[in-house]
Length: 398
Ligand SMILES: *Cc1c(COP(=O)(O)O)cnc(C)c1O
Image (cartoon, rainbow, N blue to C red; front, side):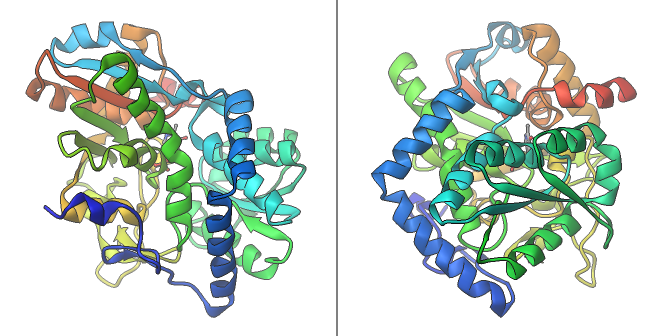
């Protein structure tokens, strides 16, 4: 295994090993360079950090609790299970950590407008929310198919004052919405910040989003050192684009004894074409300005991803995860739609917590992991969001 230091951050070109980088048209290189420099400045800027803390604490509800799930622990009869409660954040998931940070960054860059891509609409809602707080105009690109499937989130974004633009190209889903958002940014870069929603895309986004979401892992690590006097033995989180998971994992990467599991969406099964498991079943390729694991056919055409949870339904994954897979520091596994529903039911009935279907994959995976754990061990699971948005889906499937 490669030493931990190699994971610390991307190299100056934004590469994590062979992954990441900046595969974009010339017109975007300057904007990305400017953003990288501005972000480096704000990282050292005390006032920016203090303002960000203000919004995280007083607006978004941080720090979120780490809850020992005693009933769920009893169900398996093995390691003690703790839940990092990102479901208690304002707007219902970890996404607000990133949108408040990038919203504040947009203000500091003097931008008047943000553009965002969204699949299920969760990032669109979190972006529109941040735009209200910071007085920014917000434009959200969303595939036509998703606009139809996610009517409630479209309406929420409109209530929040955002403009939702349906995208008619390609498969009319998240992949195409992302292309359109990038196109808008290129055209309007003087006035506009592109608020990317996961730890993906060209450098500096995977690094920047990871840094912002690392508040999840820092709080978790602090909790265990302070209250339990020992670090967890296992970390588990779901992986879509990979932002909640990289934020949860990152502060622990150097703790070599902590075993880390990222759970992808196996959809209808890894043996079928209907899944979203880019790390388990994909191969390295280029999409949305980054090199990373990608679901593609033999001609290099991007394949459509499928998952019961719209938030995991992305055909690629953040480049740092690809690197962590190759180095072996993190183990990537997958849970099916059926296992996610099982996880949803288990957490709902044992603890009275309805998880979003994304982290329900992590809960569903526990039946495979728990038997190898021991009673005196500790497992921490990132509960990235709450299930309210998924109740209709659950009802349809059950
Ligand atoms: C969007 C979303 C995800 C997937 O995104 P990541 O970038 O992989 O974290 C996971 N959980 C919830 C609740 C989400 O809304």
